[in-house]
Image (cartoon, rainbow, N blue to C red; front, side, top):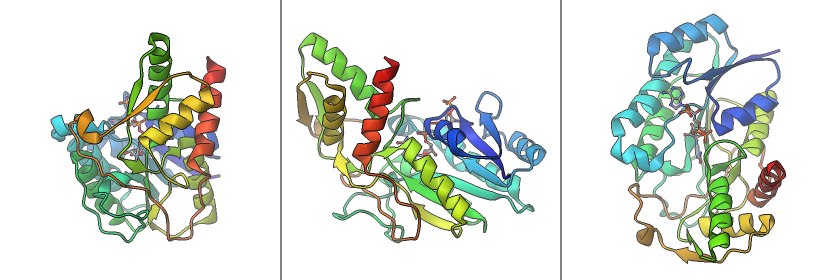
Length: 281
Ligand SMILES: NC(=O)c1ccc[n+]([C@@H]2O[C@H](COP(=O)([O-])OP(=O)(O)OC[C@H]3O[C@@H](n4cnc5c(N)ncnc54)[C@H](OP(=O)(O)O)[C@@H]3O)[C@@H](O)[C@H]2O)c1
């Protein structure tokens, strides 16, 4: 059975992966292993002797990265360099996760792996720099995904559920951006697809893996409140009206032109996650 070393344990994707990976799985939590510490990363990886390092740990606060670029670079770029250096001289595979925010959003059709990158924000630039580091390792898969949601951690679906309930109680509308379009991705569906891709032994390289179809944040919110049955009025707003610190691509849907497993439609993932969250109360 394969041995898996997973960084970023506690994050939403790592939690979903832990449920599907079969074999010996080592979940590395930030409190025990800060990926900025090169010696500690090397020692931990070498001690476990994994077949695959699944590197999910990242500084994922897109707006926070604008104000704290040094930390975003230290975690996303230097931390990733430490992971890659830790497997040098071994046959260990590395699976790394990147983002739709490597694109500028000027395309009108979903982005494929061969499209030109042009990140608009610090987070996207750090993830793109990390992609290049990982792709320098011959046994590496870089998986670009987008708009992750699950029942754990911080994500848009959970934020909307909480905000919609509060606004419904107060009898106020909930404002949601409708001029950014992307591919919402259920973390459990992504974990299944990654597991299947690894079992099939897909070639190293760059892949897009995200929920099928695409929508705006507003449409995603509408689906969430409809499934949860929350009687709240949703009002569309523009990105400019919201005035967030980080620029975001207006259109960043992802699709793959490579032979990899396809994920279910994003709305199926929303239904599953909202059902699980409402069952939890
Ligand atoms: N979330 C999205 O919408 C999205 C979209 C596209 C791509 N991705 C990429 O997909 C991957 C997984 O995302 P996710 O949503 O699962 O992220 P997440 O829930 O924010 O989890 C990231 C994990 O990384 C850990 N971490 C942060 N700094 C660290 C450090 N210095 N050392 C070790 N661990 C550290 C965090 O620990 P703490 O919680 O203790 O800080 C957290 O457990 C990331 O690479 C992300 O860039 C995410």
